Length: 189
Image 1 (cartoon, rainbow, N blue to C red):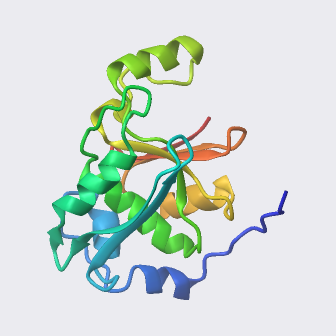
Image 2: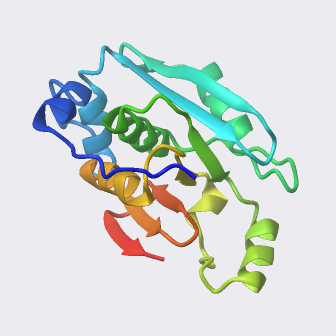
Image 3: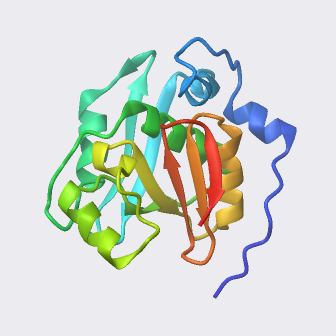
């Protein structure tokens, strides 16, 4: 197993990822969207699902416009794999994930552990674990549980928290970070 060294965020790397930052959108996700405004007028995501073996590397926003095909492609990968049920993932969550991925500047995709969860799947997971929220934002397409093999949960959580755009939960033992477009908050699981 490779040892992951702590990553330091230099001012230059953050400025490069979030150049020309201006906040004009709603405060819940304004920071992530604003941070991405100077990123070449393109927002993209690179995701891999270990459950399905599928990978998506796509642009979902160009020059101020969301691209429905890109969002659908991401949403399809982030579906409830147990029931093969798709829900369109909230654009604000995609913006947070994209901003975080830009900050991390990794040569690897985010590994998706959980995206959309149907109410049935969420109820089943709640019966198995007290850590699953009854009214989880996963059930409305507003959350994702992610990891990256060449970044620690601390590094990913720190990058997501930098966005100041939603909830960030660090689950170090399980090796993933939860990101959502709900109220700004942090926790450890």
